[in-house]
Image (cartoon, rainbow, N blue to C red; front, side, top):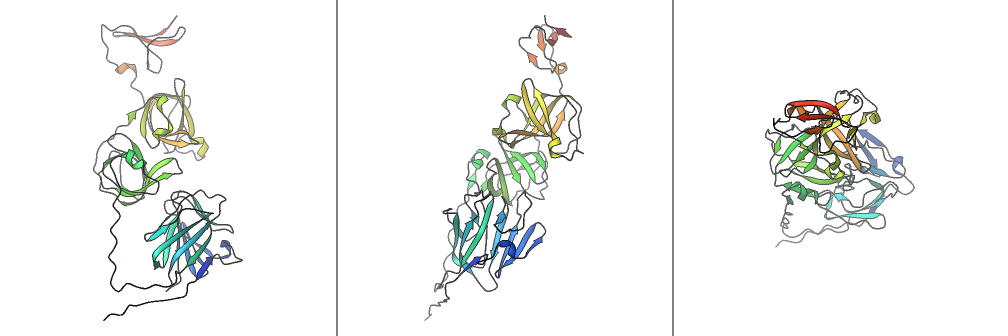
Amino acid sequence: MVALLSVSYAASATTLPAEGKVWKDYTWNQEGVDFKGEVEGYTLVLAKGSSTSTLKSPDQYSIRVYAGANLTVTAPAGETFNKVTVTINTTGNKATEATASEGWTVSTFADDQFTLTSATAQSSVTFDGAGKQLRVASIKIENGGTVTPDPEPTPDPEPTPDVVTKSVKETIALASGTQFTTDYALTVGWKYGSNVFVCDEAGDFIQIYHKDNTLKVGDVIPAGLKGTYTLYKDVTPEIEKITTLPEATAGTFTAAVVPAKDITVALVNSVVTIDNVVIDAATPGADVEDNNAKNFVGKVGDVELNLRNHYNLESVPAGTYNVTVVVTVFNEKPSLYVTEFATPTGIADITVDENAAVEYFNLQGIRVAQPEQGGIYIRRQGNSVSKVLVK
């Protein structure tokens, strides 16, 4: 006969920081890009994770867990807990929900607090602001009281079914913070360090953030990529926290040509080409250190394009170019990061028909249906090409 084993201990709670203290009263050591502190016997690690911001040491008001960063709370040796209540410093806080490590359930935010609970006592928990900045004012840790083990092992719960998406459109329809698996291939359109811009067969783009990847433009990533969908800063669809990145095969990528008037924020992450962009002055080169000086303007007719040498390209002289760009968003408007300048082939490559009617082109090589009086145009009839003033 087997007797039930019951383990009991008095329910208790610890609040961090302790009464009368603030976060900066404790010693925080910087370890690489992370911060580690010992707070009332608990170990707290503020990890940079995928955050693009430089972490700050906790101050008297809060621990700043930037978007992409996370905070881990670990109990003293031999101790466990199964409930954590987090109070938020609303000044500067942007998160409206939180995510936590496996085994923890996260409540909704209410009265500037949310609660993490676990069915079994654990020695640590990791949490973040689900893709947004979370400012932690205080943490209350409770041990949960009495634990009575089952007489026989409890079967593992059925695994949560994988969320599977079949296209980029299905992926960006997910809630931010959702873990998922792709059931479609992705082609690399541009890569810059950890940022990889990829599209599916339909031509829809999304950004992958993955450190130390070896992907190249044109590579095809087969189905089976596992990661977390994030709407970064409520603007940019991204795949982060990748746990499985299938081996890619070499392929080709050709950017779609999009008219300048159709470039909108809806094309965020897209790698596209805009033809016949007029640039009035030499572009900023790779040696430019001032971020603001990297911006310049191009025009196609009356459409003005906000361009940026974000990828350290060499300067090109004033002229007309077919410009390939990555579409990003700044202040709710398109900001176009140039990946290539190409010289337009112009009207010289247009097939000539000896019996063709008279055709007109503007000085950028764009066909004009009805030339305006007083304008200078390129006139072509058959093999005869000349510059004319229309009277």
